[in-house]
Image (tube, rainbow, N blue to C red; front, side, top):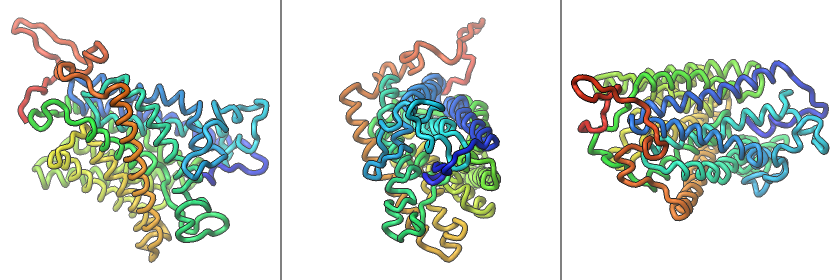
Length: 457
């Protein structure tokens, strides 16, 4: 995806096939988040926090659906660049110049270069923004005030996601534009960077971004009560598997939809996405079997997500054999990375850092080796430098901005629920609900679910 894909011809026309595919893709990405990610995270969480975990995804979707229409699209893809960091949020405020037949509507902005109405592209991009914020929630389970989470979602998507989307996809500093960093390093050809950064569907904008934000926040907030002392196992593994399957299904809209057309590129992306995910799942299971003696269901689900994450930036620019390498390495790296939280002592509740940050970073820099025609394995080295620069720049930008937002909200609203509320369970204290009922039998009161909170680690 790039700003060049959004520039329509002098006489824009509707392509109904591409439009139908993009509408479908937008719906698939929505389905990834609700219910896919919500169920995946909910199953991984403990039983007393499953509803809160699901509600964090729903809440992020709700608030971002409003702000994206008001100023998010304009900040990400608006026509006027502000310092290469973001676009003017008021140029396309509330999509005022994109509505068909609206007074003052700019016909040149009405369609993308593939004949898709820009309003359809807006809907597609909104789902990307929403799922990126929802991903962060996996680092914060069981301990965050819901009101603070909603305010954070608005601030973070405005100050971090929209600028990074503009920098990478909207013609900013990390894009292939003539004013970007890559063009300054290696020159331009026909008005664009000779060696353009590649982020086909969101390695930097989505996964590095969400993973680094999750790391900053879990370090800032501290550990859950009992972390490292009591077992905090997934309370519902079938729910995890169902969520992973939905994520895999929806990811075809995420990746193939980023071709912005129903064409050969979308077909290659579909094949690469599938192949990389299969390789990552098998690699993760092999690591588990070698390291622990057992290949687990949660490992399979986690390997699926790691592969999907890693291939996201690379899916349109590697060969199928390259996608196998991307996925297999991601499965190994993330399988080992999730154990770092116990060794280093940070409580990344549902392994956002180990999966999204690690595999997202690998997927982005893998293009420096495997990108067709421009990677190191094709005799070129400049692509690797460019990919390292955009990945590290995204890490630094997200880390600094997320830390600032975290500090501000700490003093403005407070982040954590009380220890008593956390011990009782965040579902009950924040939402006045529980996910599962208790059944009374002749032997006493028993739970209708596996209650693991008191088990020893």
